[in-house]
Each structure stands twice: as structure tokens, then as C-alpha cells.
Image (cartoon, rainbow, N blue to C red; front, side):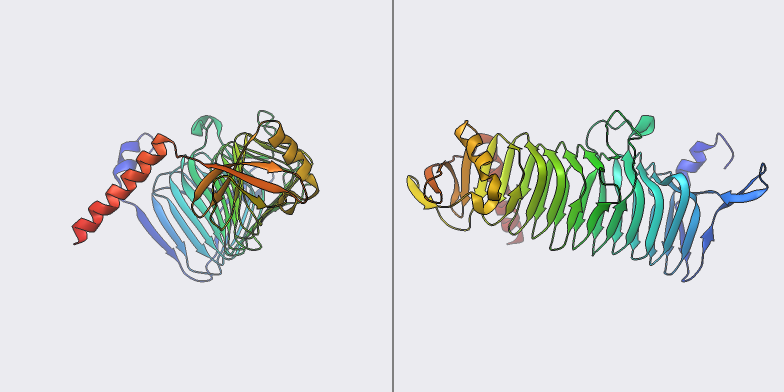
Amino acid sequence: FKSGEAAKWKVAPPTNVIVENGVNITSEVLNRNTNTYVGGWIQIGKTKITLKGNNVVSGDQLWFSDDGASFCAENATIKLSGTNGFRVDSNSSVVLKGGSVEANQFRIYSKKGSITLDGATANVGKIFSGGSMGGMTTAEDFSLILKNNTSLTLSDSSYNNPKYSANSTFHGKIIVDDGSQIKSTYSKYSLYTPAEISVSGENSSIALSTITSKSVISIENGAKMTADTVAASDVFVGSNSTLNSASALTVENTISVASDANVSSSKISFEKLTIAFGEDFSADSDVSFNLGSIFGENASVVIAALESGSEFTVKGNNGEFSASYKDIGGGTIHINTQVVPEPATVAAMLGAAALSFAVLRRRK
């Protein structure tokens, strides 16, 4: 369409493009100053593109500009030389199954959509979202998903946005699963997001210098997070999972850990500590347990916080109980009274039960 014909563009039907196995796509433009061809943009509007396998895509940037854009590539080699690299301005779905991608950044201006790396290898300078187009100042419903042994290596070595003082400033969810990993070639790499960070599964890991989330950081099912400093509103470390924050672990609200989790940091701050056990508890009873089995040589830091008034609870199969800790003879947890759920929580539980009952009646 010609310039100014945006209305026609909006009502036009989407396009479906299938690229057969082994077909390559290259975008080039002529630089008249040097009389040489350089990488050009590949812009994807209301289009679904499927690369069937062993394709090579090269250019300046891959730009998803309109809602409904879709890109699925299997075992493709993607090389983007421009500053923006992968640029998403719309509610788009991008899936890379296997293959590799090299780009200066994943640049996100959309509040919705996703980039899924499924068994892929990615070398990216940084992941970034925001700017005047996106207007992102809080967490948005965009997801970066790594699964099936994906490897994402971040290489930016300078703070390009001093406002956030982070190499990667990403306002969407980060989900690392199924043996995937995020790491960096820069020893001081910093990641910031106001949204959730989730790492799950054996051999799944994030290893950076600084990891900051204004939401929840969860590490589950044998996963591992390693950093110099970690900060979040809440932290959950599940069974057989590890959080190693060498210098400081700062949690605004609650640290929830499984009784066989591993958490280490020379400085730990929190408002509430909850430990989950796979057993029943009784009010006004004692349980032998050494906090050192979770927090190692830094257990004294946690004990000092509890002694200074931080809240302590334990969760069993039969509910949550308030508790206190005595650092005597290997450690003892005294179970006080069962915690009564807040009215809002009870209402939500009753609502869910009523909905289940209504569905059951309808089925009958």
C-alpha cells in the first residue's frame, strides 16, 4: 500500500508464507557511499512465516511490526548485523526450534507476545524493552521462553541505558526450563526486570553478575541460579534447587525454601522466611532441624534476622504454622500455631470450590 493508506493495511487479510527446506533469505541494500551491499531490514507485518528447515536468514534486523505477525523456524541459522537485531513492535509469536541466532539484541516494544527458543543456541548482546513506542515502566505480558536445552549467551559489556544501570533491561517474563541456560561472556553482566524470573528443571540455570526482579524469582526442580547479587520482591527455591548469591540476597517480602534446598549468601535480608516440609505438623511441638542444611555457613545471618523480628513459618502437608528457631544442639524449630488464611484467600478458595462443584453438576 502507498503511504497514508494505513486503513487498507489494517483490514487486509493476513498472509501465509512457507519457505521450503534449505531455501535462504538475505536482505541487502546498496550503500552508495561505498558502492557495496550491506544488510537490509526484513519487516514482517500481518504475516505468518514458516521456515521448514536448514534455512539461513541474514540481514540488518528482523522486525515484527504488526499484531498477528508469526515466525516459526526449524534448525535455521539467523544472522542479524544491525543494532536492533530481533525487534518486536507487536503482539507476535516467534518460535525458533533448534538452529542458531546471532544478534546485537532482542529489542521488545510490545506489551504482549513471546519469543520461544526451543533447543536453540543464541548469542545476543542483550535483551531490552522500553522506549517511547512501548512506554514500558512496569512488568508487561511479554515472555522470553527458553526450553529443551537452549543456550542464551549475553555479551553486552557496557551500560547503554544509565537509567536502569543494567546491560539487559527487560520488562517481560523470563522462563528458563528443561535444561536451558542463560549466561554471559561479561563478568559484570546485570539483568533487570520488573516481571517474574522462573528457572526450572535439572541443569537449567542462570549465571550472571546481578539479577534483579521487582516480582518473584523462582528456582525449582533441581535448577540453579548463580550471581554476585540477587534482589526480588519474593524468592522461592524448590526441592534440590540452588540459589548462590555470593555478596547479597535482598528480598523485599518472603523467602520460601524447600527443606532440602540450598541457599547461600554472605548477606541475606527478608521480611519473612517460610520452609516447606513433606510432613504433617502439630501445634506446640518441636522439630529437630538445622538451618545450616539450607543456608550452610551463612545460617547465622538468617538466624540473626529471625532473632531481630523477621517472621518465620513452616509449611507441612496439613497447612502453614507460625514457628520459632532455637540454635541449640544442631537446631530446633518450635511449631507454634496454625496460620489462618486471610479472608481474601479463603474467599478465593471457596470460589474455586463452588466453580468446581458447578462444573461437576453440569457434567452430570
